[in-house]
Image 1 (cartoon, rainbow, N blue to C red):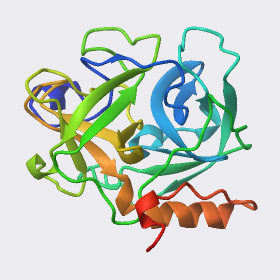
Image 2 (cartoon, helix red, strand yellow):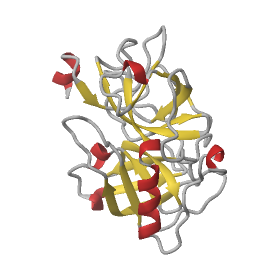
Image 3 (cartoon, rainbow, N blue to C red):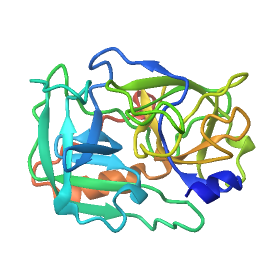
Length: 252
């Protein structure tokens, strides 16, 4: 991956560079995926017992080694707000690691989350209601603060602008931070891109280095998978709690 980074190729990624600490539990749908007690990817709670993350995060992993930590903020502390689950099953949708498309996975937990102030289900867009160029969004994660810097203790967030028209592959949502070196980077994929209160993207990959200020960062487009997401939840949950829909779609 470092070779691809140096040559300007795509790198599976998503750590926050140039961001700021988030308020504790400001994003209660944010999930930390962990192995042996260490964070390796982000995820989003989309139903009481389902998460959404990047397919490359779990590609080839023994799912028995993965834990989902809900209600976390400072990963170095023992927080009473946390709810911890194992992974029961994983659902993919044609992830292509060569073309870096369909980088989405649904993770079924071995139990149901208790919804409270610190743990809540995210709102997702309706099918086809993606985010347009110029939209201001928020990326977030626990990844390292720079290529050669350590990971932060607390969740980081970063304001970004959607620039999908700059992408080589417009099957993804792309973002950029204008006029400064900031963005996502390798080490913490799978976290959400939040636009106008909806999770519109899943942190996927970068080109040209962490927070290059020139190459856009890429996210899997959640709006293109909304029907599939709902079908998974309906088919594999005896008491399905379908994700909250885009309010603008309620009259469709």
